[in-house]
Image (cartoon, rainbow, N blue to C red; front, side, top):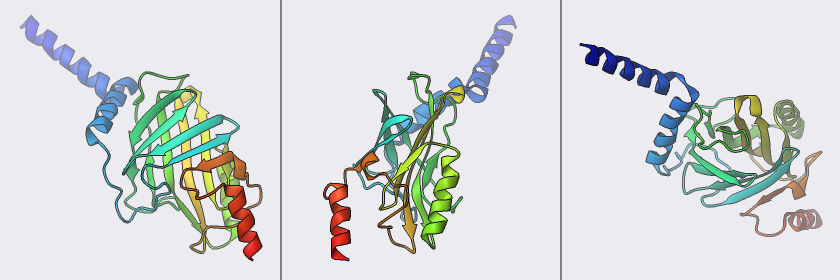
Length: 212
């Protein structure tokens, strides 16, 4: 009888650990990410990064590198460490985005690196009717996380919430009337490099203006 009671208590404690603690739920999520591999991106999702591409961006937080897999997998490198997740594709538009996200359930990145054990991550397109609406959205985002953006609307947000052991990263492509912009106030073209750029970004912009 004592053995049964002890086994039951241990089982309940184990279930409670995995269900109700950040470490336990994080371990479950870590195993789930590993087991999924790299699923394909659903055709209706509006993403930013082509397969097997890289973005490097520098905000006031520092420099972050984001690498895409073949599908939903993303790799984040900061301060000498790399962690990965399988993103969750959105099945309906939320706050303008029909892209993908990862809410950072539990401490899913182990071991902890420089105080970070989880990532709250987003990627997608943001569509606007005009530049004023786009700039208003950018200003609103600045209240929550440091960010940089280019004249062509590629935007990367990168910040930390150390009290929650949390890395915040967003990769966005701003679209105006279905097209990438060619000039945005407050842009920093040198702060973001994308591997799919066909040529150095500054030169591309100059050529665009020369052709106009």
